[in-house]
Amino acid sequence: MRTFYLLYGVITLGILGMAEYRGWSLYSVNEVKNVPRSVRDNPGSYRSVYSVYHHYTGGK
Amino acid sequence: MSTGSPNPPATPHVKAMNCPGCGAALTLRSFTQAVTVVCESCHSILDAQDPQLKILQQFKKATDEDPPLIPLGTRGKIRGTPYEAVGFQRRTIHVDGIPYSWHEYVLFNPYKGFRYLTEYNGHWNDVSTLRALPTLNSFAGAVSVSYFGETYRHFQTAQASTTYVLGEFPWQVRVGETNDVTDYVSPPRVLSSEQSGKEVSWSMGEYVSCRDIWKTFALTGDPPVPIGVYENQPSPFSSDTKTIWTIFAAFAILVLMMIIGFASFARDEQIFHGDYVFDTNSRGEASFVTDPFELKGRTSTLELKTTTNLGNNWIYLNYALINQDTEKAYDFGREISYYYGYDSDGSWTEGSRNDSVAIPTVPPGTYYLRVEPESDFGHGMIHYEITAKRDVPQFGFFGIALLALVVPAALITWRSMNFEHLRWAESDHAPMATSDDGGDDD
Image (cartoon, rainbow over all chains, first blue to last red; front, side, top):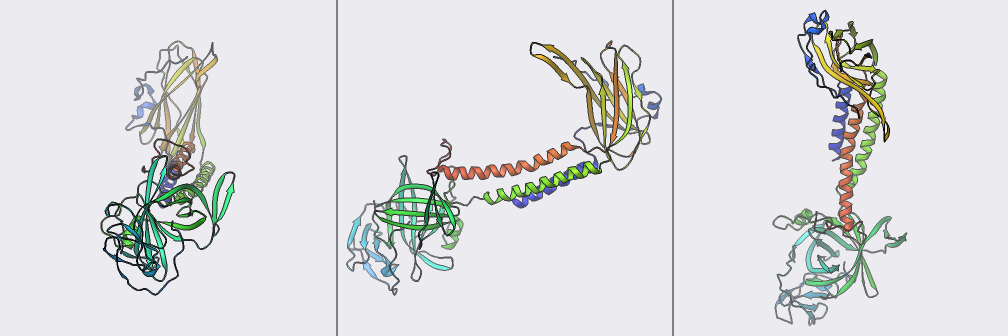
């Protein structure tokens, strides 16, 4: 049990160190490839995957 | 455990004898050291010290009513000394009207004398009589005894009666004989006192695994699986618990050092800042791109903070972090909303004016942001600021790591506590009486 916990802890800290060093985040984003260079001149030509977002109009 | 002291050693010699009750041949394995011997045929308890083998008691029991797990005459080495099983008795206590029985085996070596084994529900103890008296302690109602520097906690006091006997005994055994038995435990040992009239005898038992008993006496078949937790059964978790919390403390210090290290060495560098206004009254194209900015160093996080002046309104920002050279984009959206007011419960707020998000594993390069704000039409101007920071430590991971480390340690502690709970549930000091604390539960 002790050996298992020791190994488990070392692996956990290893993953933690890797996560911090490599810049992992709990937030995930969509990666889009081949974005046309024309977006810089015509930002409206880019279609975000979130562009049809249905927002929450909150308030109590 | 046993009563009386064994007689001094004598020269071993075999006696050929017959039971005066039924005439069956008797085998006397402990030679002249036996005080009583029980005929296996008619269950007459005979005076082994009397040349005529006077019948002391007869009891009616079937011979196979309670067969010993270690057949009488079986030999085995305990702590390097060969012993032979010469006697067997069953003893019973009643707790709340329920009988609980255990078995005791008398072992004999002509040079070392007698030794005993006890068995209850597959739990075994190697027992020998004490040569010195333990010291009785009583503090704040808790009774314990000390013996050679070790403290034994009181476990149970009960009246035990002998309900079945076979073979030879170094004391005047009788079926129906009763003694006050008190056990004090310090796993894996137990100290037992037996009081019969004014005579008190003490013995010490040490927990032995079932498998070891089977191996010692070369018994056939598989040993029975122990049921429940026995009074002096060593906990498989107690030493682990202390060690694991020590290891956890070491890991927690390491995590703290990592927090300090990453917080100190992270670039945490602001690489972009822009102030913007979104006119919700305008129906024109709202999207725009920022000036390019350089992300230096190794692959790491990019933290994007959005600060607004929202009031009872919302804004949704479609973000795309686009690499100018590779034409690869990180596409994501953030909703920011902030509402406030006052009602019968008092003032209230909901949401936040600000937002922060860490984009994971962004390689170095030249990037720009494409931003497309959305909101309800006709709510005026929304001011917002965008700030990008490079290589910001993600402290949430440290919390997750600590949680991941504490969960197994807590689980092991809980199992250890549960083991002790089951142990003491069988004692006179049961922590809490529940219907699940049956003695045969594991």
